[in-house]
Image (tube, rainbow, N blue to C red; front, side, top):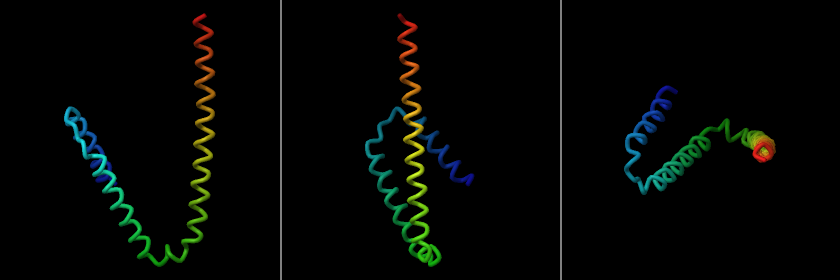
Length: 96
């Protein structure tokens, strides 16, 4: 775990030091490695018989978790939007 965190902070430090340089292909490289990681994950899942046997149960749980995450995010965004609008109205009233 410390290696992952160290790599992330190393990347942040490298990006900070190299911020004046323009990396034009970094988006393509990132997408390429994401596709590689997804493929390797699929190989790992496909090679594990326990996961394959319980895939139907895991799929239902995954859909439930994803749905609740989307619902929670939508509710939080709605509450934040209402709060921002209310604060904007108070600011406009105080300026008058």
